[in-house]
Each structure stands twice: as C-alpha cells, then as structure tokens.
Image (cartoon, rainbow, N blue to C red):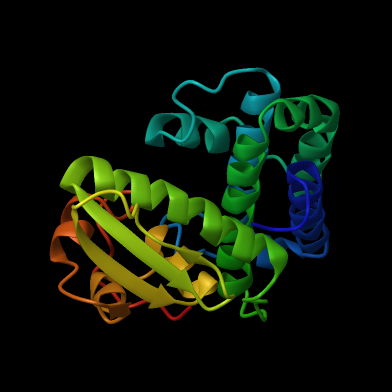
Length: 231
C-alpha cells in the first residue's frame, strides 16, 4: 500500500482533481467523457462532489448505485465547475472525520477519485501519470476486493502480482484451484474498473483461461465494454 496515510492520499488526489477542474474553460467542462457514457467533465465533477456530500452527511448505504449517482449529477445541474468545487471543499471537515474513522474507506474514496481523474484527463487529451501513489494504492485496494470476490464466488485463489513490486499470493493453507495475473497497477486499475474492453482484459498476462473470473467475479461495475479503450 501507499506510504501515505488515507487522509493525505485522499487530499492529494482531491487537490489535483480540483486544480484541474478550476483550470478548465466552459468548452472543456462540456467535453464528453468516453469512459463515463452520457457524462461531460462537469457531470463527473458533480458526481464526485455529490458522493463526498453524501459521505459527509453519513449516507453511505446504497452509495455508488446508478440511482444515487444519477441523483448526484441531477442535483447539481446548472452549477458551474467552480461552484461544484466550492461545495466539494466545504465538506472537508466531515470528510476528514469519516476517513480518520475508517482508513480503508478513505483509500476506496481516493481510488474512486483517481479513476475519475484519469477519465477526465483522457477525455481532454492530457497526459496521465500511470505510476503515481494514488494509482498504485487504488490498484492495491481493488486487488483485495477482486481476490475476495473470486474466492467467494468461484472458490478460486487468485494470485496477483503488480509491476510496482507488490504481490498478493493466495492462501497457502488451502487446496483451492488457483489463477495468476501479472500486470501493471495502472492496467489492473483501468481493467477492473470497467475502463478496458473484454478483449483487452483477456489479453493481460494470465496463467490460464480467465473466462470464469471475467464472467462472474471480475469487475464490481458489471460487464466489460465491447469497444477497446484508448487508455
């Protein structure tokens, strides 16, 4: 995991996100985001702001569902990017309390932010740092998530090794069948969050046939896209 504590990791990612948003003109804010179909850059900002508002208000149940996400965007329709950023920053004290109380939840929030930040930078044809601390930490967080899901649903031990030098081996005390994957933190993160196509994910360095994992336990966001992603 990252050497940063959860709050520092969240703040660093949030501040980079807001700095980018505040630098955009109206046309850039209205740019479509390919990895979030139907959303503009401003809509993505409205979503992450709304998510923070709900966490700050203690409304975690159902967070991340399509219905709640749509409401977050709708509630900020007509708001400028600067107004959205101002609202987001207004929740800082409550967010620090929530993250200090649950560091793993804080890492998940930072992970969500870095994925959406990458989405926006891609939409605006800006460079993406694929080796930053937030990307690596988010990949680690999602590894734990997907390993547990694969073990629970398929009774398969999933050995994942990332090129930053971290390895997440299966439990040696079990006799479950196993599968391994070797990839970069960035490629893993983009793949497991549904930003890569099924064909692209199948082309990663698997030790065997990943069909069952991809069909039943891979991404928490549903089926993978059919169109190849550029990033």
